[in-house]
Each structure stands twice: as C-alpha cells, then as structure tokens.
Image (cartoon, rainbow, N blue to C red):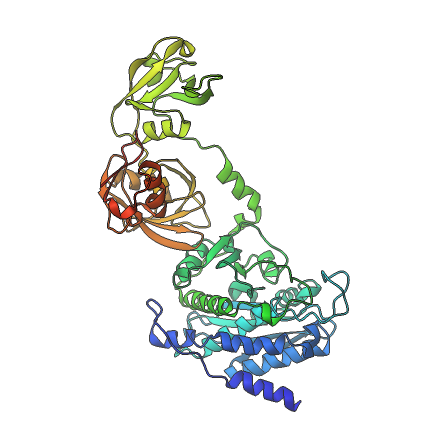
Length: 563
C-alpha cells in the first residue's frame, strides 16, 4: 500500500507541460489548460494502469479494483464532483463499478445540459480462449485497449478543472467498467443514468487511441447529429490529423448504448493492430506523442461544444446509413449534363497502329443540337475545336466547360468510312464551372459533398476528390439548395473552403476559360498541389513549378502553362 500511495503521489504531483503557443481564438487560460495535457503525465498513468501488478484489469478482479481506486484518487485530486450512486462509484453486476466525476457548467441556462466524455478502463486480465488472440494465462495489460483512452480521459478531466471558468454546459467524465464483457458498464449507465438522460446532449468515446500511425484517426458516429463533422474538422486545424470519417454505425464500444437511445455520439479510434487482445499490448508500443495530440484535440473540441449556443439533435436517418451506402454514392456512374445531346464511347481500332483509338458516337438525343447538326450514332469524333481527342473524359471536359455558344467537331461519318469533315454544334446551357457533381448531406447541412470530379477540370487541378465537402464559396457559407447558382454567379476565381478527410484548406479555383496568375513558388497556391507536379510533368518534362507563372483552362486543351 505504501508503494501504491507513492505511485499516486508521483502521478498527480508531476508538473504540467510547458505552454508553447496559443490556440486560435482561445484565451491564455484555455491555452494553459490545453498544455497541461502532456505525454509525460500520460506515460505516468499508463505505467500504473497497464502494469503487471494490475493483472490486466479484468472487471471484478482485485487488479480492476485497484485501477478504479487510482481513477477515483485522480478525480478527487482534480477537484471534480462525485457523480456516481456511491460517491464516484456506480456499482453494478458481479463486483463491477463505473467511475464518474462531474464538472458543473458555468452558465445557469445551460448547466442542466450534459456532455459525457467516456472510456472503458477494464481489459481481459489473463484472458480466455474466447477473448484473446494469443495464449490465455498470460497478463494482458491492454496498454492501448483501453488504458490509452482512460489515460487521455484523465488528462482531459484535469485540463478542464484548470480552466479559469468551467464551460457553459456540465461535463461528465465516465470511466466504464466491464466493456470487454459486453458493454455492461455503458449499458448499465444508460439503464440507470446518474444524470437525466433527456438532458444528455452528446457522448464522446475514446477507445484505443494509443497507436497513432501516419496521423490517421478513425471517427465514428459523426453522422448521428447534423454539423458534427465540421466541428471535428475545425478543431483539427491545429493538429492536422488524417481523419477517416466512417459511415459505419459501430456497436462494439461504449458509445453504442447511447446511440441506441438516440443520443448523438462520437467515437475516436486509432485502429486495430497486431497486438490487439494479446499480451504484447504493452506501454512500450504506444505513440505517446500521438496520444498527447489526440487528447488535446478532444479537449479543445469538447470545450467548444460545451460552450456552443446550441447543440444539434440526433439524426434519425443515421440508422439507415452504412459504408456500403457511401460507396454506392461515390462509385455510381456520373450523370454529367449533356450540352450537345450526344454520348460517346471509346472505340479501339483493331490492327491500326497509327490511330489505335477513336471516340464513337453511341447515342444522339432526338431534336438535340447534335441531331440538328446531322450527327448520327456510329460517327467517329476525331477532334474538338481542332484539338485531337481520344478519351471520353477529355471530350466531356471540352464540351462541359466551354463558355462558347458553338463548338467545332471533326468527324468521320458512317462508322468512319467517310473522309473527315467539320460540323458546328450549338452548346446548350451554362458551362460547368468547377467540373464536379455534388449532393446535399443532412449530416453536414451547410455544405455540399462532392460525389464525382471530371478529369482535366478546375476542380481536378485543384485536387478536389469525391467525398470532400465544400463549406463556403467566396467567403459565403454554402446553401446546398442554391450551390449551382453560387458557382455560376462567381465571375472571377472562386475561393472555396474545402474539407478533405478532416483537413480544411482554402483554395482558389479559376473558372473555365479564365487566366490566373499564381503566387510563386509553385502553382499550388492557385490550383492545389496536384497542378504543381502533374501538369508540369505532363506538358513540360524536366521543368520546375517555379519557372511558370500562368495557367489557362479553356475547356479544350484542358491546361496550358506559360513561362
């Protein structure tokens, strides 16, 4: 016991990390609290919770009880209010107990609203053949599963108590027990809540956040309430994580019982690994720097959510969504506007080494501009406005982006049997300025989700990808119902706020037919990273980005660079 007390004293007496820099619009008090979250303190917590002495923290065992005592001692040291049914404890089942602390909100009008931050502190102990992936009978310390989430939650709890003023809403820090036995702790809390369930606005869960690799963090539950994804992404600006926003409704961690009761949830996870549920899941395998960044990010995000004027309610549509549905949307054939009234297909010419491929007209719509120009199915299209063309996407780019009312097609009629001729075809409708298709997404209301990007268009050169979200156009928040109008009304280069996998950037995209001078070095300031190397290597082998200053998108030759 004396040794154990010394460990507690060491853990809670350790000095806070140094304050290195500010954090956006937050004040100095917030920044100081943020930087109290350190990898040194995370390591101290880990060294205790994932030690052999606790024998794997299986629920109902002496090692699990020692872990619970350690957590309670920390919450008492931080000055949190007990929020269990017996002080900090909420006993249930066969000697199990959740541990719960509360930080009351500072706003009388919001204090009765709660956000839960949760993590399970139990693991599998010595294991059985049913719950370990190696040999049972060894101590399974679970340094990542889930001492990592528990330690991060302890650090976030401490940081919240160091704030000059508590957030407007109340925060509950819930350390769930018996997760490994079937989410028993979270199921018990939801069935017997220690605070009114109807006043719970959000549940944030951290499960296995100790193995950050390539800055990749998996995010689940973000579709459970409209607007959660932008909040998560904006908080990510200071950290730069590559966020894997999944549409999967996971049911294998402690957020699930809350989700089943129509409460918005978020789950953060750094992914499975070779040591999952093995005795080798030890402290020396952890990415402590990554844990520190994730804990600070979740602290900042929670602080902003707890201080927001309003929080979104549960989205019932989330229960019908899945990763399969997301793939169906992004992999469905694009339906580009047909401005000529014809469709083309790539047609290989067998045995022809000089002209191995042509574009063949596969369909002509009745009374369309193409029909009026005398174009028929089976005709070969050799060039657009004098530029040879052999790819369907290049043809689409040339016809969809042009702002001219007419376009010249070089054809060979009658299945290529006639000599080449030129025909002028009227172009219908406005140009597609960006070269994207999009959809409204109820989970991200003030944005549009890009579903398809046409090769060779301004959006393609800017590096936009299917699954990205556009949040604003020229500084104005996106109205999904009039997004096309917003694009058409932009007569000069468009400034877009785009989110790609949780990373928000502001880019300038010139409309088709425009000439744009970049801000050197490189073209990436104007059209994104892809333009810098791809365009130059394709058109000017051996040259560097800094040798060029101007880019043209005219919808025919796609792109031209001039020194």
